[in-house]
Length: 139
Image 1 (cartoon, rainbow, N blue to C red):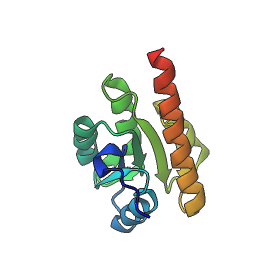
Image 2 (image 1 turned 90 degrees about the vertical axis):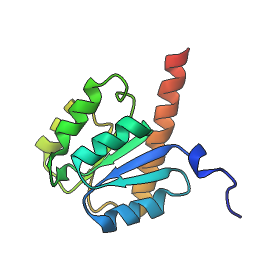
Image 3 (image 1 turned 180 degrees about the vertical axis):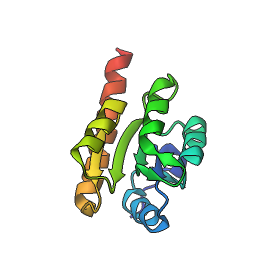
């Protein structure tokens, strides 16, 4: 039985990865729980997150137009975007890259390839954490 929830009632996730196969794979895995928008560059991603205010940004740090760490810092510096949960799902596996990403403001860091069950579980956990943090902030 299909969920009768409208696609626009689902929280939005932006998948910022230049690899179209990865975008399709992630969209397939998350389509039951999120409305997915794929982007190919940091510039495009920033335009989309300003317009859409997604619940979650899934970010490959290696982008054709720069380093994804710069986008994390830019989003964290903007009060309108600061509450977006950010998950780096990236080829970068070094400890220094992880430390830089967490210091910049990422909420999770997964190194590709990530097993599908692990990935979906982590994204749903981030979604729940975001809801809980917003509920506490409202009190």
